[in-house]
Amino acid sequence: MILPVWNESQKRSALILFGIASAGAGISIAIGEIGARFSKIWACLSSFALKNSIPTALLTPLSMIIQCSILIGFISVSVMFMVWWERKVSAHMQNRLGPMFTGGWHGWAQTIADAIKLLLKEDIIPAEANPWVHRLAPIVAFVPAFLCYAALPFGEGLISADLDIGILYIFAISGLSVLGIVMAGWGSGNKYSLLGGLRAAAQSVSYEIPRVLSVVPILMMVGSLKLTSIANVQTGFWQIAGIPVLPKWFIFYPIVGQIAFLIFLISSVAETNRTPFDIAEAESELVAGFHTEYSGMKFSFFFLAEYAYVFLSSGLTTVLFLGGGSGPILPSWSWFLLKSFAVVFLFLWFRWTFPRLRVDRLMEFTWKFLLPWSFVNILITGFILLF
Amino acid sequence: MFNYFKTIYKVGKALIQGMMVTWKSFWQPAVTVQFPDEKLNTPERFRGALTFDKETCTACNLCIKACPTACISLEPAVDPATKKRIAKVSWYQIDFGKCNYCRLCEEACPTKPIKSVRHTHQYEWGMLERKEMLVKWERMIPSTEPLTSTNMKPI
Image: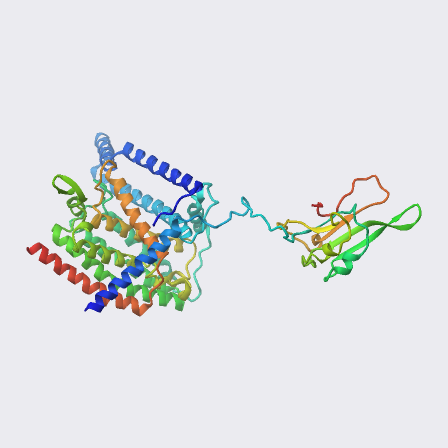
């Protein structure tokens, strides 16, 4: 039995949650497709520019600036939400309550207060540190995370750069932020930071390989690297005698889909340096790993980058395996967000269930288990496509 | 080969089991007590801060003799007419910096039916200075003035 019998207070909170969910659904139906609305607003703006003889060369940078601000806003708000959510989920998994005071209802404003505190904190550069490397590291860690969001389709028409090589671009750019972590480890002048940075580098480089290879079956089936077309292939249902049974999501493809999904999920958790693969910032061994010597705004940038990657991985999982924005009734962006946050919950669930892996076990797991199985998966896909 | 798949099955099963444990805890009610808003009931024989009833005390000194840390001191009242000591207390002082909340004074106290020195259930008590720990109850005789305690309100 998974769900225990509920008492009165649990019933009340379930009712509140149901109310929030239905209110969210109603609002998102009322808003409708954001992508279409954005393009209408943009058409209005550009016609206004044409009328007032504003040079069209200004329009492209303006649109980029607008898209960047929307993405930055989305990243910071979703990261704040995820931090609060993680604290609540972790607390409830340990029969605690988590933040309850700030903001009134279940401490919803806790991360806002934390963010303000982090921005106001003193910025310390240790005497042993290499100041420029130390200063640059958070930027180098965060910028790739932000760049990756450019090619992530949030739903129909909600993608700032619909690249033909979208998935390749995301994997390539997200690999860059290891550099920031190694720079943080080296530039801090602290042996724990250095150890954490080196571990992070080894781990990220190793797990990148099965992560990319687990996506190859999808690329073979779809025949495209474009994320929107991958998401579009997965719309609709498989039908048995005219009755829709399962959505055409890639995770429901027999055998191949499940293996690919598991490998992608495990290596995504490892890529984002989260427990059970958090040896890079193992609190009980390395203080805090690569960001031991960071405080204030720089620390908050590392935090932002980590959680941005968590959401990016969840969004990628949604687009690749869970059908992107496809779904009934609700508009595509809310389906995308729902599925992504479900995967984020899976990440949190992993984090608060599994103990940390040892370094050698970690490497053994990726090279001797995930990598061969991703090759096997590609082979099976080849056979399926052949016959 | 068989053992390999058996290991994979066992490990996968163990992982799912572990996740089910946290899933069940996730839906259980939290055990946290939100302290300033919610308070647990103290046990019946809880030894909180001491209180003193200056009207019933007979100034018999038994509590002073019983106290292992010598934190209690008192002075008996004197009748101004006869200049003789009476079975009333003039002032009574407890040094809560020394008190170890052992209940020996309450057990020694002979007043009935309610002991004049006794423990309460009060545990939220913070002090900023050493001298605040000296709590003194004063009883002026004869006097029509209202009785006051110097620091702490008698509970």
